[in-house]
Image (cartoon, rainbow, N blue to C red; front, side):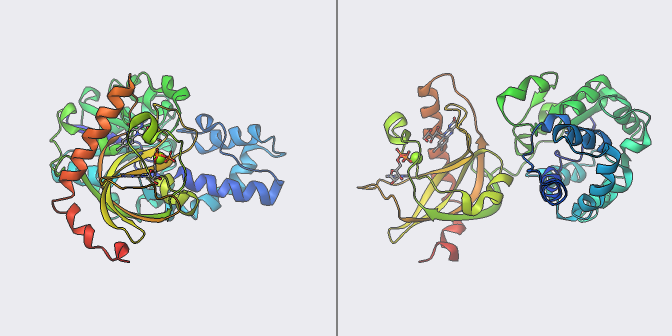
Length: 372
Ligand code: ADP
Ligand code: RBF
Ligand code: MG
């Protein structure tokens, strides 16, 4: 594989959050209706007018899709600059550019929108000389036209192109173009997994992308079996969790209420992380943490559950816990037995313990946030 074609929205950029924000505000203000983000699959990877039609239908709005789009498009557009790069996007782009791998964007969005979305991100406009937009081809995804045109402009044969996509529509398009396709699904839940079945690989996020599987140069940025990340900081009182950490697994996890940092949490990839914990006046401890939905137990909400790598004589419900999360270990997984899950968590614990002794992870033990 010598070329990579990226979808933009939901793959490199978190624009879904912006659409949600605008729809939430607009539906209440204009129609007194409550946005709940339902039926994302009808909008994901679609052209703007198709997405608008889905919303008009789903919320029974007394307007045409054209009117809805006309009234909301500038609101959404005004917020493009707030769209954040998805976790792992900058890391992957920098890597491919450094190794001179030709890259392109193939998106159903309009050309002018794409330019505005790329602009705030350092290096993105310059690094994508090839962009094929929905308004530059006759048929948008799921037709292969966008990706075939991108290959043409890259001077590449389709079989030498890898597509990275978050939407089922885009996966269909990439396969129809005769390309390899890696999916990073934006649609959550097991229920939508079958929509991604034709992808060559399904990843939880770009953090798990392994270039060498596709004939591309490998990453060399893992340190001590973990990937250093932009640190994130959260805190709160320890609350009761699902009551199974110690009882079922023999591994206690100190649950935190997520309300105070729900937006921050929504942006984080589900997975296993390492970092440092300050517990009330008891001290600073190493920790390994699960972030997500615990697929093995099929929870209904996204939680954070740190296991402090220290023996405590007693429970500490209600005490204040502050966490700095500094490295990523692996995606959340499902397991065929409880024993396999427990073994994996112990392995995560060993990785965290060792990694936190070395830079860059070790330095955060001294972070001001953890001082009393
Ligand atoms: P819950 O489901 O209520 O979170 P757990 O069985 O997961 O219950 O136990 C977690 C509780 O155990 C924590 O809230 C904390 O009070 C206590 N605890 C004791 N040792 C530890 C540890 N090393 N790491 C995390 N929590 C611990
Ligand atoms: N649950 C899962 O369903 N899949 C996992 O891959 C997973 N990994 C974990 C890793 C660590 C380090 C910890 C502390 C927990 C993990 N769990 C995982 C969460 C576990 O299911 C949870 O702590 C218990 O359900 C108690 O709430
Ligand atoms: Mg717990």
